[in-house]
Length: 220
Image (cartoon, rainbow, N blue to C red; front, side):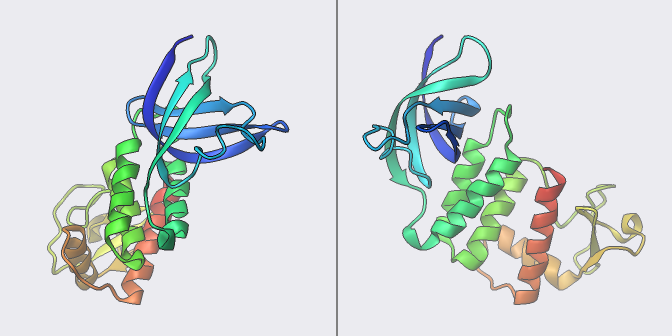
């Protein structure tokens, strides 16, 4: 067994026995890891104050001789990732990251950290879907709204695309099926994702949320 130290983002905690926890983290240099935290649920546990969600943490842990679950030895709570007004949105980011970056992946920390930065810098209405989309895009799980995700052909911004089976498709690949992504929607999304300050209508927001939900479900 050896000891490791790294910056981590805490995805979730699971009660184990009467007094312990199992935690799942995305680490900056070691991918996703699972750790046993012995005695963490006891009143006087030194881990209680440190294992706070929605904070960047620095931890020290012992790697196992066999299996994949190490043991947490020390935790230091660093800066918060979002302010209190966006805690529910922050929890949504953690929930989605837990699905998008499952056990065994070697990435996820940078993608989730950037997502929290986006959420912190924008109003929640646009900040949360923007943050989740950036996480999907950075992980290579979605394409853009310029090219067909099947044939890769470029689609003019004056034409429609179609959302079908968790893909944004040209009219030929969609064969007239799917949710229509009209030119106005596509132009709005491209401006938004390029960092321009725009306002999306409630209808466009609903379409984007539908696209995000299906994209995440397709990679579950």
